[in-house]
Image (cartoon, rainbow, N blue to C red; front, side, top):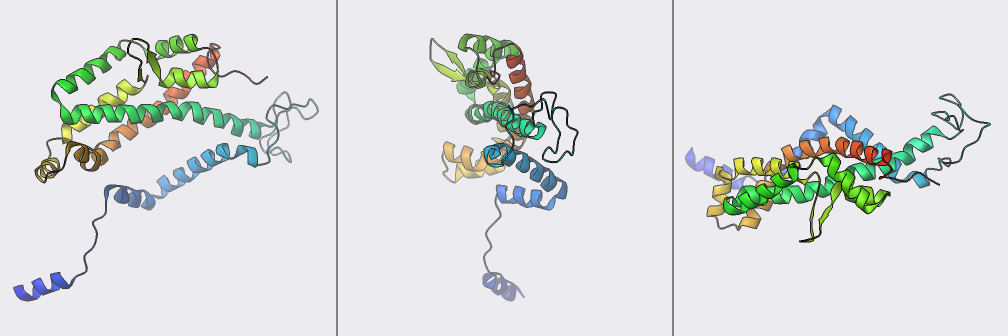
Length: 256
């Protein structure tokens, strides 16, 4: 019986183990609600990205003749505003700026914060102390006041608003940090600290894998979940801060 089992195992075709991202993709593909939400998000993103090629009306061109058209009017699916401007065109073109100024600072913060938190959590010791105490310094400055101060120093404009929300220049050491980096770094560091002594990490270390390989291959996929969840919440915060900067005259300039 044992000989037959061994022969059957040897004859069975070798199957490649499914990776972390393949497993995540498979679970999402099976969730109909998640796929429907993903379809809506992709549709919004693509409509904003390809807005100039959709044949929409000029979002800034008004006409008193067609002002306050109701929803469902031919050629104006969402009607017009009090100045006769197409609401659908204004919504899509406004989404381009909202997505840019809301997502870009979070992406920058995600990359830098995850890298810092992963290194701090895995290495530990004095390096962890140095990174986390530096992050604590930035917690002393409220994000809103910090963004307003940087935006006021740089001046108004879309690019400066993005810089104010994402990058802070410290002249003495010319180093870059991000308003949202402290939060993401702390989340990444806490999650990494919790998994750095698990069996799969010890096995990778015992097999001769270097620190960079362990962090990139074995640990990154296991700590991205909580960081992704936290980062998605920061997108709305980024948009609110951007709106606040524009309200104060420090953000995006209105069209001329």
